[in-house]
Structure formats: C-alpha cells, structure tokens
Image 1: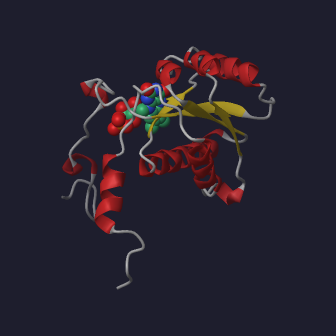
Image 2: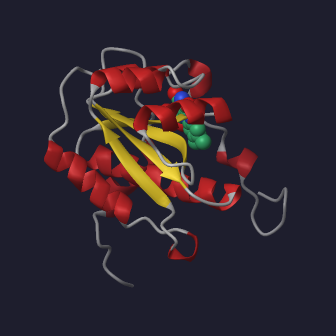
Length: 181
Ligand SMILES: Cc1cc2nc3c(=O)[nH]c(=O)nc-3n(C[C@H](O)[C@H](O)[C@H](O)COP(=O)(O)O)c2cc1C
C-alpha cells in the first residue's frame, strides 16, 4: 500500500464539504493568491490536452456588477472580491466538461487558501454576448461561466434550503447491477 500524498482525512473533508459561497466580506484577495489559483487552473486536464480556455480575472467592482447583471442566477457576482471568467472554444459537451473540471479545481484550491467561491453560469447566448462585449472577448471564445471569489461572510446564509443538502447514497448508487444496494 502506498503512502498518501496528503493527510487523507483533511483532503477528504475538504472535498466533501466544499459549498458554494454567495455572500462575501468586502476584503480583497491578495494578487499572490489569485496567481496561485490561476496556476492550479492551468494544470487542469482537458480533452486531448487542448486547453480550450482563456481566463479573465476581474477585480474591478463595477465590472463584477456588470457580470452580475448578465445572467439569471449571477447576481452574487456583484459582491465578490474577484471573479475569473472562463471563456472556452469548441464543441459543447466536451467544453462543458473541461469548464467544470477547471472550475471545481479552482474552487477547491480557493478553499485551501481560506477563500470562498461560487460558480455562476451565463445561461443564454444573449448573456454570453453581453459578457463578450463587456470584456472584449473575441468571437471564437464563449464565456460560459465565472468563478466568484472572496472571503465568505459566514454571518449570512449562502443558499436556500432547496439549493443545499444531497440525496442519500442509496438513492444514487448501485453496486454491480442497477438497483442493487
Ligand atoms: C453547472 C452548474 C451551474 C451553476 N450555476 C450557478 C449559478 O449560475 N448561480 C449560482 O448561484 N449557483 C450556481 N451553481 C451552484 C449550485 O446551485 C450549487 O452547486 C448547488 O445548489 C449545490 O450547492 P452547494 O454547492 O453549496 O453544495 C451552479 C452549479 C453547477 C454545477
């Protein structure tokens, strides 16, 4: 048996307990920490190692407010210290997968630094056009999403009850054959 690279209990606890933050303190994030998150993002795996992304870091509050206004569920971006807009090139399913992998890594890395994070999707073509124009993103890239970052305001609720909690394992897992527990 090999020795784990990280203390398994703390790594597993961090993986299990990562939640979406939507309310943040006004404190800025140090540039060094943002750069560490970008370095983690850079090493995300992608289909055929195409790395089909361009990341735009936004720290300007007015621009983050404009991003907040560019989607149905993106309002929380109005209160972040920084956001990372993920613009991608390519076929929809593969790109959605690559986007998700990158986002989850950055969110976990943020967690390791004590920074809260939340994903925001620019759900419609109009939303994405708005973001493209706001940030000057060229036509071959589609800004599908952003990661909002900041120090979580733990005095506030981050989500409604229906956005929290999970189905029990017995409901989502079978062993050997579908329906066998
Ligand atoms: C593909 C995807 C898109 C999401 N888009 C948004 C969004 O636009 N705005 C938002 O506030 N949360 C968004 N979320 C966060 C989910 O609402 C959240 O992960 C879910 O409710 C579970 O809550 P938790 O992450 O705090 O455990 C998104 C999550 C995923 C996986």
